[in-house]
Each structure stands twice: as structure tokens, then as C-alpha cells.
Length: 297
Image 1 (spheres, rainbow, N blue to C red):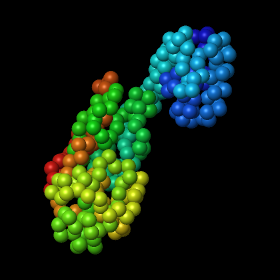
Image 2: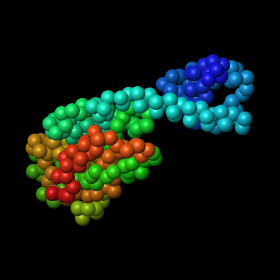
Image 3: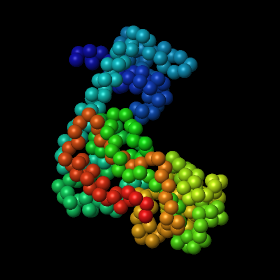
Image 4: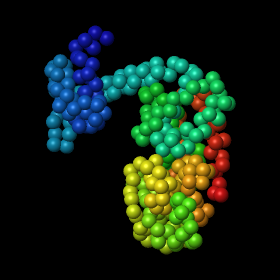
């Protein structure tokens, strides 16, 4: 490993990131530093290696042919280092680390975790609420709960719950909704990050789709839900988002018509290893918790 003394580790990280991502900006975003810092690291590393690694092109940084084998080895090496760090973070077999979207954690999971702890008092949970997809091989995460089509590379994605959407609103607004077409007479609030539109539900309800009366748009589903609870308008919810508020009577589902979006909730684990007992235990428990939502009411 004496060759590692010839080039600074930060320089090698910069070379690998730029080579893999193709631009200084993308590498800077991933490494959490400025573009200028990445550029300087690349220049220093090239000087230490005694060769040019990249062509500076209008479309980005393009590796010279002679540097490609080195960059591939660097990618393999840093991936192995990252996996090693992940393994080190997972030493505690009693700790289960779960990556989950903030809205699923806040609106569904936290209200039920005591039930899991009662069944498995020997397992401690660490919930990492993030909208970014965790790398299960390198981030020290045991499992993820994701919403989508279930086609993510490098993981096993087991379906948990098909996503069904349906209108909900505060009880005061529900009094004005007698039939599905009445939706057009009330203000509607919209989740700007949603992967579906109102047309999905309107078609399922037998209503010809047309623009709804949008009052507010939110980029975060929890805010979207809170606005509906406050009476700002009718929202298009899904099972795990609205369950707690519906159970408390803070929201009402006026029609009982639910539409499939084609997406679903998935239980995601690494494809390269057999899930440990703590992961299997959580999967079994979560499947049971979601059983009540498997069929429309």
C-alpha cells in the first residue's frame, strides 16, 4: 500500500467522484464541498500522479483513456471502504436502523412503534427519516421502506401495500360533499411532490376529469395533511398518510371510493445478504400492521 503515500486520499476521492459523475458540480454536491475545492483536489492529484486524468470538455470532465482503469479501481476501492464503514456501524445486533420517508415515519410509524417494542423488547429502533434513498450497502441502514414501483437496483423490494388514493377533508367541509362531482365546488389542496394527480381518483369515481379548484400547493406531505385538518380544502390522501387523522375523527373520507395509483409501499433490504432475524421480525410486524389497509373499506 505504499502507493497510497504518493497521493492524498481527498485527491483520490475527488478523482473517483468526478470520473463517475462526469462533472465538478456533481462531485462537489456528493462530497459536500465547493466546486473550487474539488477542482483544486483534482489538479493536485494529477500533479502527484504525474499525468492528466481528465479532458476538460464543454460537456464536462471526460477521463483520458489511460486513466480509465485507475478510475474503475478507485470506484471499486471506495465502494469497499464504504461497505466496511457500514459494517462497522452495524455491529450492535440489538439495534435496527430503518430508512423511511419523513411522512411515513411521522404519520404512521411513530404511532405504532410501542407495539413492536412490546413484542421485541430486545430490539432497539433507530429511525432515519429522509426523502433520499439510502444506500443499504454503505449507509449503515438495515432496511428501507419506500414508495414507488419496486424497481430499485441492488436491493430486494418486497411489496407491503398497494397505494390507494381517496379524498379526505375536515368534517365541516364533508357536509358539502354529497356526490363525487361536488369536489369541483370546493377548494382543493395539492401535494406538489405527488406521483399522481386528481384524475386518477376522478376516473375511478366515474367523473369526467377536469381541473379542480386548487387553493394551496405544498411540497411536503405532512404540511399538506395539516392543511386539510385545518379545513383549508379537500386533499387526495393515501392509507398510511391519513390513517391516524381519520381514526381520531379529525378528517373524514366522504365517499369511500379509493383508486389505485400503480405505486406501492415496499420493504427494501440488501440483495447480497440474507436478512438477519431483527429485520425479519420487523417485516413480520409491519406486514401485520398494514393488513387493515389491504382492501378498500
